[in-house]
Image (cartoon, rainbow, N blue to C red):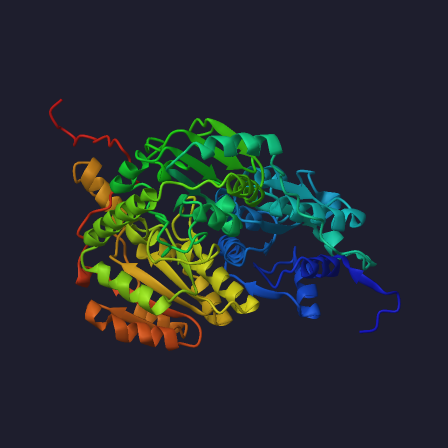
Length: 565
């Protein structure tokens, strides 16, 4: 329709700004309190909107889209209960440092914060969002919409990156205004490391003969600088978030085999470790008891990371890529070269750790081998919290690109499948060519079961590998190991996935014998859109080695009731 006054809704301004941010897809649930924005998406036809079946799933989708495309993820929700529904997803994005913009509606400005029990209102919603976001902002007028959104995106994309929430009241969303002339996003700030700090750190590292880099998610954009240090003889180990920063078939990398006993023993032969862009999280350091090399140095964009979790002998605050480039400049100028025996010993430790893991898989070693074979080198590897991921998925399949690995960092189950949808949509809209593989367990899978309908509707190019033992397998293992074998609340009534999938037109195959796996995988890869590959663990059997919760260097056993004191 012709608009003689050249005015648009604020919702259209929001959509136009997101287009300028390079957003190609957004996720959410339509509501009366976000309709002006979504109406603008539909009318403008540039941003693809994915209609999730719940806000929790939508948040996970936007999170994984951000991680797998190394760009801004966007989620649109309604206010009140809907904003509450996304809280768990926001906690996950915050834990993972995913750059996510959460735009939520809000009730009409005249009724806001009046305690009038207005529909869709949540008392003090902004405070709730601040608790689960890097920052939470409220738009208070038409004139401040664009500036608030620009600041929100800048905050989300500035290291340490994270989710930022913005409330936009519905009367402001639907108000008419003129389209601003400058919709360009603000520049992203990068923390520049001090030259003196880099000089001192380079001097310390130059004295080391067997240096090791510990690479976290905050260094995923620093591959080129890391490769320069590798040429000087540095070894590399990554966290699960840092996977693929160095291709995991690189002879100089331990991959994410970072806590296995052969690797911990190898650490003690190193005479320096440089931790880059990593929080040294508890479940990747045996609850901070993992014996890391000394001296230990750190680089992080967050100045508050200094001394956290592990004491360090030197700390440089700065963007990881800038800092590592500066170090490489200095060490190359000094003609530094590490002891070549370091990489020989690293490879031996890696091979021991891999052999031990694969032996512990029992029959599932063949599943891992087959999946790696069909995945190739260009794929997304998205994992839920499940026994299989903790046992092998966090280290295998091997990944080769910094944004290819996505997992539920915060430990919440059920987020893997919607995350995989986000990654699959990201691959589709960016044309990356990546097939998305999702590893899930039946216990967590059912939490977001409704998103299967979203997945089918959107024809998301993905394969779900559903490990089905009809129980919370890890809970049963923990109960066996720490609660005297007293099992409770872990057995699950499980859907017949063949019938369920037929009801929503989702291609499905159940594997009861791994000899049938190659044919079923071929079928899955040929599907036009999603495919559910169900692994019947009750028929195939268990792992050779039992996983009973996050590993630690010390385990407290809880005695059975009535046990002698």
